Length: 175
Ligand code: PRP
Ligand code: ADE
Image (cartoon, rainbow, N blue to C red; front, side):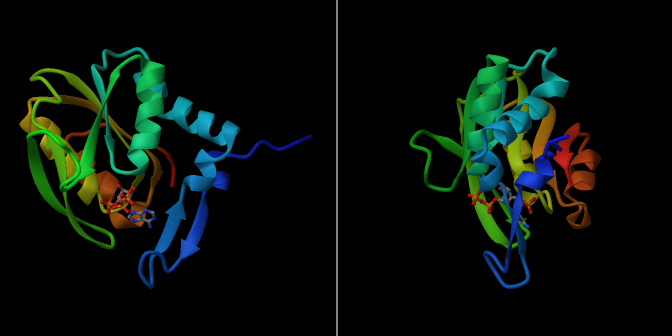
């Protein structure tokens, strides 16, 4: 009997990218496969399907690919959090560090209304620095985060514990 592949089987590892010593978990191979991509999107939104979600917020860049599909499926709007200097309107910003660097992310200051319910989406949770920056931006606008969904968690880097310590519901598809 044919064995169906699990989500993790579609993800490849690139050694020493973007720096020596980093094992980069590359989800482009998951996205490129029709069954893998559909499974990932369906499993990400599954815990939230019956809840009132006003907007899906995606973190640049792979959070846009997943977040757009999740928003379409849930029938919500989609809002991007982008790296500094990319959004055209008035923004709020937040600095952060991640596994292999530091950066600043931004959110349009009118993209979320106070009290709106939000699902935050990204491909991967490592240190949690990127997601924490996103959470801070959403909460500064008064958004109420219902959950944070990721395809991959790297548990050794502590991101999940970090977000849970902030009171977040964290949903991951594989480690
Ligand atoms: C990766 C990944 C997450 C982040 C996770 O993005 O897609 O957004 O790192 O790391 P952390 O939990 O340690 O913060 P990256 O910064 O490489 O940006 P990109 O998607 O724009 O390439
Ligand atoms: N973001 C932070 N660490 C990562 C890793 N090891 N693989 C892919 N994306 C990442």
